Image (cartoon, rainbow, N blue to C red):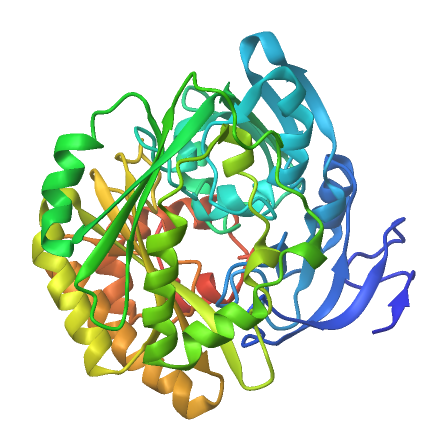
Length: 465
């Protein structure tokens, strides 16, 4: 890959940026895209300069953990935000942090942990960029929370004409609710102010049960428990009949894990051999269940920040020459749990999907984002599986994915957009009924469609202003 500093015709003038004519990809290795250049701005002003001079298209990338071309499109200038990572303002006493959006959650945790503060809402792994998290409107395992939009006070966004706008639930509301979960379609969010939470001690509790008991258990013991901080449930393949509830509850008991944050030493995390065993056979999956039975007997006490600071390198290697570990995610209203999961299991078995794990999460209703996946209180089914990467295998995945989306839609649910683009246009519009409103807003703010990626191109709705 050749790095060059030059006068790019797409900009029209020289910028103090590293430019790379390169093929880009995502973490799965399955979505190679040839872009015109990759640039790494280090300030909002540099982003403004790029946007003003670029003739388009522009795509936006951070950690590149989205899995279907959400960070790139053919011939684009890809703005790599990872050097846009400076702290703008930190008010520990108010539990507020303003930071540039190329920063990772690891960086945030390292900053706020000495002040006994914690991120209020984020995904389970801390490598992701904050901007990427905003663009997909992430969630995690937090009980009593939901999409990240619920913790955002305001953000600064660069629009297609280079104008810098502040948006919040009170100011420029249309942009606020359009840009969060908008996959970079409206502009580039360069700074965000986040509401933080207290870093408290938590103790892990675990209970295995038949899956048909889980909904009642959750509603009786977890849903309204103010002491529960993190919660998920693990469904075990290949029979899918058993689920393990894992809850981290606030406690005053002494710590059994003294470390405040998990190490980001990549060499110590590699789980290549265990993952190979689990993914290779039914025996491996059954061994995993036996291991969990032993592992979850323990009830460790740790800091909230420790449990929230997992590194994606725990899952390495994600992509190999012929195979890749991939995610999909489906959302259903909580009251539809017992109706949906049998359909999920039936489809996965029918297509012999090599499922490693299904994690059930909980999220409260979205506060109003246009591309909201949590239109009500929902359960999220996070499916972690392995697939072959040849074209026939991709088509096979597309078949069972569309069948699962139909099952979700029948239960008034939705599916998550950061993954492979197998959904039909009709399925997308049913799952995201405000998509037309989103694209009308995009047409007003970005009339020449400067901001684009493969997701936005595939599901773009032509609108009349």
